[in-house]
Image (cartoon, rainbow, N blue to C red):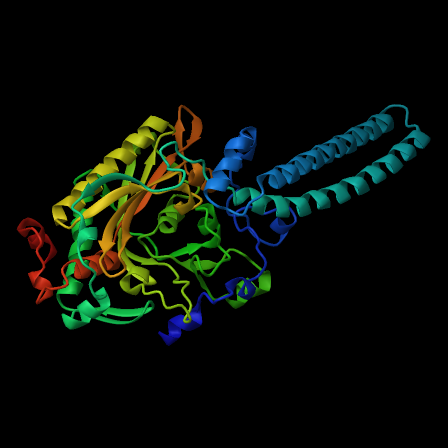
Length: 464
């Protein structure tokens, strides 16, 4: 634990003061390219977003994001105007160089050549200043442009979550003590903090069994097992629509001497192999054979997310807010076809729903409102169980429509008749074992042992 604390930047109460001012790792301007390697040049389709300003304003408003889209567009227009001026100056510089060459090769008018050289010098000075101004404005506007969210799917509720289906109803049951207390009574859980907890006995077997159970069931639906790295670079984290500078979003590894020396913003993040950034790290800048689409991948492993709760806050989270969770993550790439993507989404939600139904615990499936979506999500189907202690629903898994938002930023493509197109992505954490375990313990709070919790025999054989 001591070693981990030295390596990882933990979120603090006012964490923004603890990090450097924001710099994009995904988009590198020309002046910065001299000192660092540009890993990816993202496809910026902001012009399409600005064509529908009313929809963009509504999108940002519903998500409750603090982004002034009119200001972003205004700065973008200024940038485009300055780029046009730069191109004009560059063309003039080239024309003058051609004229000088023509004069020297024909009648060699020295006075005319000197006049053109002076004009060319002034053009180069103007061009140098304009290029510098463009780079400075690019740094400002691109961070704003890259912070714009994905388009909202029509099925995403504007305000309140929409219940898609419900199986059983635990909310009518009386309140219980916390799952931490229940787990300690059953001697299957030692909980110290969101950073440190231990599953013991049948709870440990439950964790391993659930991972195998969900992965196996998804493989029956043509998913292929995948093993990802636990680490991801800032360029990928930002490419996924996350703030790569914010230690409350991901664990940022402490800067090494080489990064401090070069002022490189592309740092390492501890995200876990069962996470969206870990899948995207593999697929970034790749061209997927069209014969492999739809590509359905599933990974089981760890997922690391900082718990931003401060020591002064008393809200109980227990296993619902742990920083390290065993999870099952899926990743689907489809061709650039909306109906194909939504078909994969619907099929996956139906498959995961059936997996939860077979477990026999009450749960519900809801479409989350826009304000609850992450910036890369267009639509999220959330699988939830009821916490009898907190008297509220807890998300134990989800499946999200990402569309081509991530693939355009990270250049995830496929080739069709010599033409490269961006894939459309569906992703999600279909189960977070600590959250599922916490709800199960509270649901069966009177069980004499963990093994006596009622689970269908066919499922129990796979879990234990």
